Amino acid sequence: MIVALCVRTTWRAETISEIKLKNIRFKMIENKKYAIFDICKSKTNQDGEVFTYFIDPIEDDKKMCIVTLLKEYLDTYFGKDWNKKDDYLFTHDGKKVNSVIITEIIQKMAVRAEEDIKLSSKSLRVGAVAWMLEAGFSVENLKSLGWTETSTAFNCYVRNTAIAMQGGSKKMLKKKIKNC
Image (cartoon, rainbow, N blue to C red; front, side):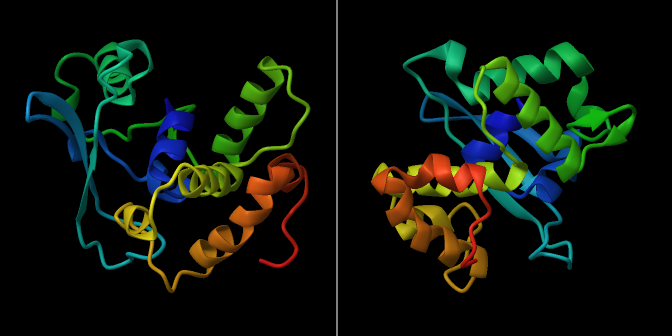
């Protein structure tokens, strides 16, 4: 679930680690169930201003729909009254996760997939932005996820998308990008 959320939202690991159960809700909009997150803190929002993000469902395949999977995860791990709890969405050994733990989870998944590549929580952001741009998402689409055009990271990801589209994505995952 944590990897799917990283890829789908392009949020930093630190932002994901701050999400509390009480900041998640589901709402029917035009006969579709959306997951709604109130993000209260991030690297670029230290003042605690609340930003609300909607994640739309994938209607074609409920088994792969992040909204459906998130609801099942919440009900399974936290019980039916999960939204009344002040717990963090993702914990490890009783503490909220951090970027190191998320990177470890991602690396374990790569091993299970029998892929010999080095991945990190930051790789997910780079890969997600590159994929979104390649798939035809506009800069405005990405900005709606919380990015700004002046963001150094965002500009770096956009610049390097051309490399990824030319088959360099596996190289990007194995090596740190030097020009960023």
